[in-house]
Amino acid sequence: MTQSSEKRNMGFVGIDIAKNKIDICLGIHNKKASFSNSICGFSKLLNVLPPPEESIVVLEPTGGYEKDVIVYLQKKSYSVVLANALKVRRYAEAMGFLAKNDPIDSYVIKSFGEDLYPKGKLTVLIAKSDEFRQLELWLNRSRQLVKLITTEKNRIDKTTDKDIQKSIAKMIRCLEKELKTTESKLEKLSDHCQLSEQSEKYKQVKGIGKVCSNALVTYLPELGKCSHSKIAALVGVAPYCKESGNHKGKNKIKGGRKMLRGLLYMGTLSAIKHNPVIREFYERLTTRGKHHNVAMIACIKKLLRILNAMAKNDTPWQENYGVK
Image (cartoon, rainbow, N blue to C red):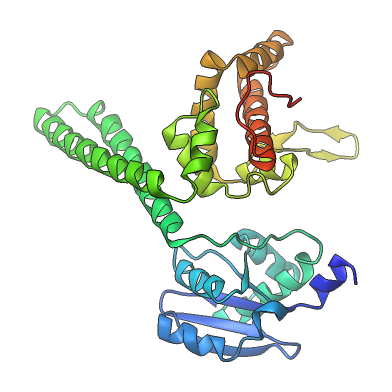
């Protein structure tokens, strides 16, 4: 039996998640049921699900309400796929569903998985350990604080009221103090995390600092497990063409993991200054007339290819790393 046939023989389960409940659709007869979005509800859910080895569970992100059920199902050995919510909505419209409610959504999510998973368009989520998830939560908190500090700093320049400026400056000091505490917590977690060795390996690459290496471990666990083109698409630095008939539009990047892409952009700026491999590549592109942003995206892709090869081959960074 081919891999594609095996995928088609799997039973798909669609789950629509809300704050307080989850709606499911499963089986060839599209049986529907509803449970509370809690540990009690998850245990009842297990009673109606097919065995883990015979099923693929498909759901979509719902502002964080999906995380508990994902962790629960993964611990029970279920394969879980997280579908893009916008794509699922467009799929529903293509099927003719103009109405929208939770039972309909669970059916659409199930159909979406049945159609696209066998074609290799959906990927099973990599299960994460408890310490790994804790590292991810604190890294998210760190990015939130950085964003808040940046917002406050932008505000202080746009007001002439002295009292408001003092209020904003006080808030900035408070947030910066909290950020230092968070970074200290992050450092301790990353040192004791089972993936700290991988993080240290990424830091060998000039331009990849502590924050970026932790982000790569946390937000891109696919490194070393997927092709270079797949990794580029996951980060959102893969260019997509826009052509129709005689019209030839410019290739543009689209989608991907925005937070990780932002961190890699800053890391690449540093790499252009301090990493001879990336610097030479950037200078070669700009000498040929490539715009700075185009050259930057190309450099991020090259950096990702190097990191992906290092992770896949379990090799350290080398100045003459043979990635074309």
